[in-house]
Amino acid sequence: MTQTPQNAQIVGKVEYREGDGANIVIRPGPVKVQMGQNDVTLSWVDEEVRGSTAIPLADFKRYVAEGKIKLAA
Image 1 (cartoon, helix red, strand yellow):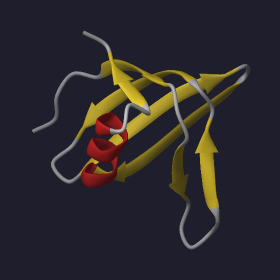
Image 2 (spheres, helix red, strand yellow):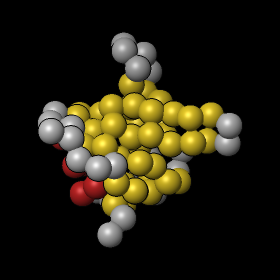
Image 3 (cartoon, helix red, strand yellow):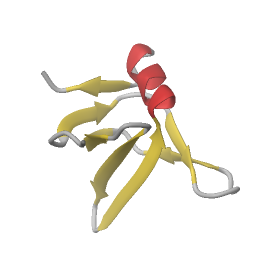
Image 4 (spheres, helix red, strand yellow):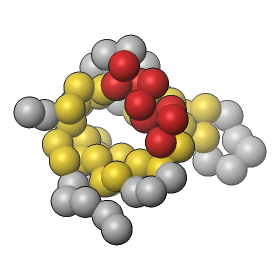
């Protein structure tokens, strides 16, 4: 069961990896957060480009705890 997407802000260094490639930094700014059972999907718009990635739930919780992702109230 998934939840309604939530608004959040990237305010620190948040990274993801595509396959076996290098880590990619998500630019600071607004994102939509979609919680899944084992992972979290982050989606954003950067000028004309839309981005989206899934990160492990544990990584997402760490980023929130470290203050790098701020969830909207």
